[in-house]
Length: 147
Image 1 (cartoon, rainbow, N blue to C red):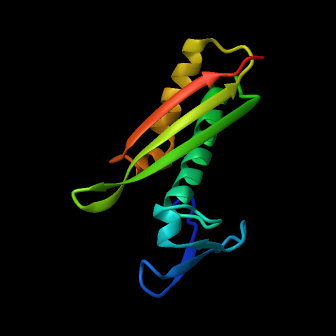
Image 2: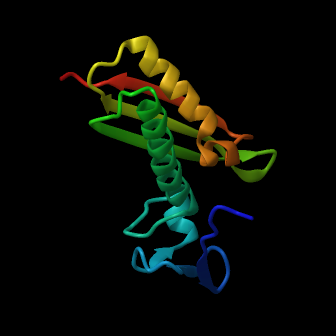
């Protein structure tokens, strides 16, 4: 039995270049989002893209995994700031998500750098979205914030 299942639906109208879509989350957690090919490959213009949604998923998932690992080490974070930059590139003539670069800033009282690095590495292995992106290049740059 699965832990959780979530659904979002997209309605797309017209061809790829001139068409547009609306993403609707079944949870109601956010309003419908507009998406176009141009918002994916050019300027967003107030619309989202699958890559931006993947970045949101990856940054939030990694935040949770790192918070868990830091808590297990008895050094829960005061604050985590995680950014994910997801890159769409052409691979053998096919648009492909090739990487997700995570940048982590953390405020964690009483933690040594080595223990922090170990928690980051463990979170990288644990994060389900990182595992989903297993074929992509995933990098994590992490630093502790000054107190």
